[in-house]
Amino acid sequence: MIGHLELIPNNESAVAPSMKLSARWKCVLVTLVCLAFCSAPLSAQDRGEPWVRHTIDSSSRGADGVRLADVNEDGLIDMTTGWEQGGVVRVYLNPGPDAVKQAWPAVSVGEVGSPEDAVFADVDGDGAIDVISSCEGKIMSMFVHWAPTNPAQYLDPTAWQTSPIPITDGLSRWMFCLPFDIDHQNGIDLMAGSKNPNGVVGWLEAPKNARDLAAWKWHPLYQAGWIMSLIAEDVDADGDMDVILTDRKESSRAARWLENPGVGAKQRQPWPMHLIGGADQEIMFLVSRDLDGDGLRDFVAAVKDGDILFFQRQPGDTPKWETHTIPMPPNSGTGKGAEVGDIDLDGQADVVFSCEHSEEKTGVAWLSWEGSPTTGTWTAHEISGMKEGVKFDLLHLLDLDADGDLDAVTCEERHNLGIIWYENPTR
Image (cartoon, rainbow, N blue to C red):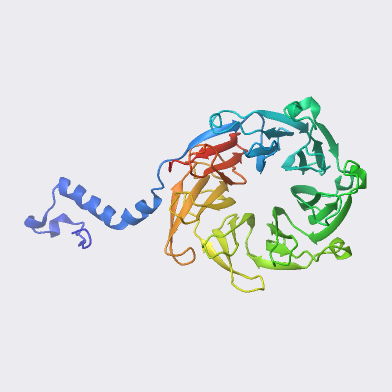
């Protein structure tokens, strides 16, 4: 009986002849002991087989975060990224499910130094989707890569033009840009975040002529340590877009939201700042999703050297959250990205995470739960495996192959796996 074992004295001379064990039975006994004490941990560590990986592009070095949009209005999600070490900013057009497992049609829209982020937006309102890149390192500037107005030239690198935004030059190390119409004048504005020196969150006010980049005005809102996430969402349901952020460094580290004071002069002053949670954690990327299925928007965030944080939105008119932890599985890297979606099509939202420092460890995996996401049991499932990839980044969940389940899109910048997606085997 495995559940009941007696310890056998090591001194065989003290054991009656009838109690002496052959070498064979000693091996059996050792096996039974191991099964009794190790079966649960082994079961918990059995994460299944890695998903099949497909490469969108691996032509440069240091792919650093993928951003999404349907730039040609064909109903397919396209992508852009900055290659930090390669210094190039590229756009990728989704070829459709029949060709999605091959390298995607791509164009280099500009070359800058140490691009940390690249994001789509129609900056000048001409109908062509441009790209804004944010640079750290020695460059410390933001750029607009102007797209050609002729859709037939979108993949022609000579048809793109790159221009710096003068007010951002040398101001800080730019990490992330969030385009949206903040003041409801002159089209798209740019919320931007950086890291020290002079870490800051603020917004660039678009002038009447958005092409006149020297006329863009800078409005600082919040002194920061190292901004990771910027998300536009009407947190307080008052009809305007607030900004959710994660700041991973210094005394300001936490998940917070900046309250939009409404259209007018107050927008150009610091916005009221509110804590979501995680003030004692180095929070990385965060997503806004309904994890527990109660109809309220929660936040899920990866944490460096810690467990995943689940900020559960509480009922009521005043925005507030209760913080819960989701265990980071052993033999994983340190938390970097997080996403939420129904991976196994059981009608319940799951959590997907990506990691840095994943040498010979899991870099991307997903977590399912039973009972409750706050008090139930979490189970880890493999996505990337432990053989390849060291520094993964932002995560997105998309059904790229149109088979009815969510695939995982990310990038990896140390082993130069590039922009990649993992094919969900559920279907």
